[in-house]
View 1: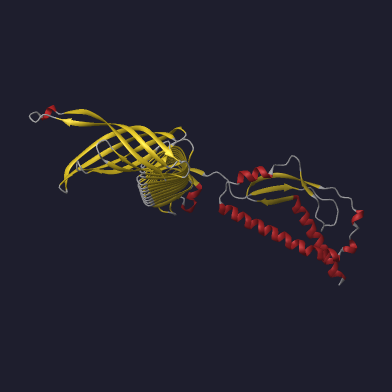
View 2: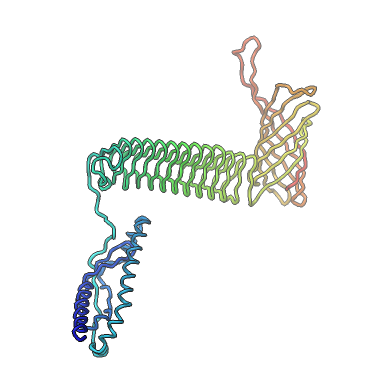
Length: 479
């Protein structure tokens, strides 16, 4: 029994010495970095007592290194957390076992009051990444049938090539030149030059041109990204073009697609054949049908436009904006959340036409549309244009409008194939009772251009400018 007890003591002493030696050159895992620490030999003490350890003043800053490693990918961070959990779990298991042996040897150990220890100072020797950070090797040419059936096999991703040609698919570590594949290209690093694939390109960063018959997926692009169907990138510095959809987080340059373009932050030009969407626009946003943005600072052009804040110009048939800081919405139907001008009016013109008009937008600039008729002359009249309303004194306002007129004539309940168009500029006074009901007197100036020619000499045709004066009198109601 005594021999077994002495053997146990010998093994524990041997283990403690090895443990102490391991503490002299220890590697700590901190987030995604590895810290190599040199620890001096501890003085004689209870080997189950953990010495006090502090980092020296001239040691390397861990915080600084952690900032540098924060750009690593998520899957690397997840792997590191797993390593750290295994390390912590192992140390916790050892700590739970150690007190049981300490109770057995308590009689052989001196009292704590008899021991005089000094704190042990750990010096950081090296701080680096837990992952391999060695630079990739350079090679002039890569040829493959389909990865990994090609030069360098599965190690092709460890090299940066000047030329890369793959009949079907290729995967390399980087390109500084040209990469071509019949179907699919994959680059785990940077492309400097041209990347071309019949179907799909995948790269970390592109500085040059990226072309794919179907789609491109890239983290950052500095140059041109072109795809037959879809482009996706985090950051674009240049041009992004797609046959159907272009997607990016930040664009500094131009984003274009035949159907739909979307970005978080846009500095430059965004165009979508049908729709464009961005959270913040600094430049121009345009679409064939619909534009939507949270903040526009510049120009927004489309059939239908929508934004929360506007500092610039919004131009379309239907415009919607919550707040206009410095700018204007130009359209027939302008829906403003604040400072809205909303009015319905009935006017009688000098030519005995009765018109019903609707004004919508802001007081600075609003759209106007009107319909009316003149039964005596037998014509149907329409108007559309823009107007402005300025307060002169209390309830007296100055209203100015510019609109286009169109008349279609009819006889005996049969529409004639004859139309007449002219432009009208009107400016007059409006007096409101209680800011709701108003009476209007609006003198106006009509002008139009006619093409006249001699019946005998068709070459003598010429354009003639004609004008006339008129007066509109009516009532209006603010809605």
